Image (cartoon, rainbow, N blue to C red):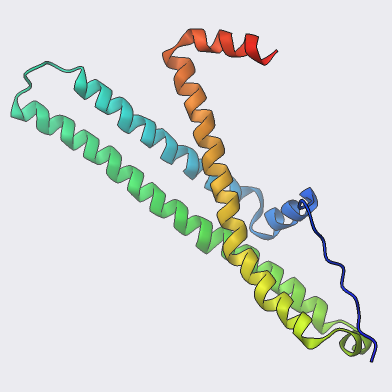
Length: 180
C-alpha cells in the first residue's frame, strides 16, 4: 500500500494563515469589538489607578462620608472592569473562537468528504483523524489564547507609553530623540 506524505511545516506561521483565521472567525466586526473591549478594560484599569491618586490627594482628614464616596467610586470602576473582562472573555471564546472553529471544521470536513477515493487509500486514517482532533483542538484552545495575550500585552504597552507621556511631557521628546 502506498502511503501519502503530508507536508509538515516548521518555523514561523505565515501571515496568510492568521488572515485566514481572522476571516474564518468573524472578520473585522467581531475582532474590532474584541479590541475595543481590550481597550475599555485597560482604560478602566488606568482609571482605577487615577482614582486612587485623586483619593490620596484629598484632604488629610476626610470624613467618613467622603471616605465612602471615594470607596464607592473605586468599587464602581473595579466592578465595571470585572464586568467588561467577563464580557471580553465570553466574546473571545464563545463568539470569535467558536465561529472560527466551526468555519474551519466545516471547510476541513467538506474537503475530506469531497476527496477522491484514492485519497483514503493513500492517507492513513490516523493522520486524517489527527487533523480533526489534535489540530482543531489546538486552534480551539491555543490560537485564541495566544492572540488575546498578544492583544492584551500590546494594548498594555501602548497604554503605559501614553500614560507616561501624558504625565511626563519630556518623555515624549526624549523618546523621539532616542528612537532616531
